[in-house]
Image (cartoon, rainbow, N blue to C red; front, side, top):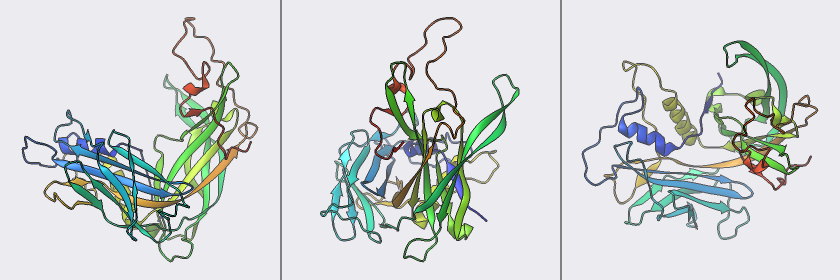
Length: 362
């Protein structure tokens, strides 16, 4: 039996607001004592993805019982990534509750090694300290290859009639064994895209962004029990103007721990929870965060580490059947000019950049 879970990229802090305020359908409301001085809970979360360079990100927020209040971003905390040898790497505050830092692979002051353990520690301005459990950096599993194929599907158009649309379907070929380690593989996949677009002034941009709205998937080989994946479907996208000047499908394959995989699976199950008030309540989402100084204030969130292999698949305009360019945009029936588009300036395209990515070879 295969186990693959796909879910939307969301702001986790907003999910917790729904849970605390009781606005999430069919999820039991978390009962909290009345308090004139919030917070009633904390959200501390983060991830460290090793690479060239690696990157660690984190979020620190106070949570309230009322959705109207929203989460309070903690922008002045001291947030550090620690390894099991006592080394620390300080994160930079974005002043909106988010923290980040690049982690070069060749940094002698903070060497990144497979098999090492890492944790996140956040010290708030008032002295409260929150700390994650240790997470082990597993080896990256290399992607053998990617494949794309054109398919079609019948969908309802805007007037309710069936229409046949062409799609590109993306598949992966990969082993399911960690190099030098005998343990079940757990993957977190992100699907990306990059394409070229030229505006009406012959300026060319390169868009780099998520491929789908439901853009993250997990794969748990402890349940699937397979030796490898061949021609395994990752996702589909419409065959449109994005393929007219060259297109890259990008797969970020991350090796994660069994605990992190379980957290992501529980999050997916909560997001998919639908039904009636008589259905069984959703189970709790696990957390590996604790407070060293204020155990009376609940803390939610998860920190995990991942080793990543990135694979690219180029699709030429010819392979895609030379679809129509986006520009120029046909004039409207009324003749009125609408809001600016990528044809006015290709930087208006979502994820648009003028600089050509280093891996763009065509």
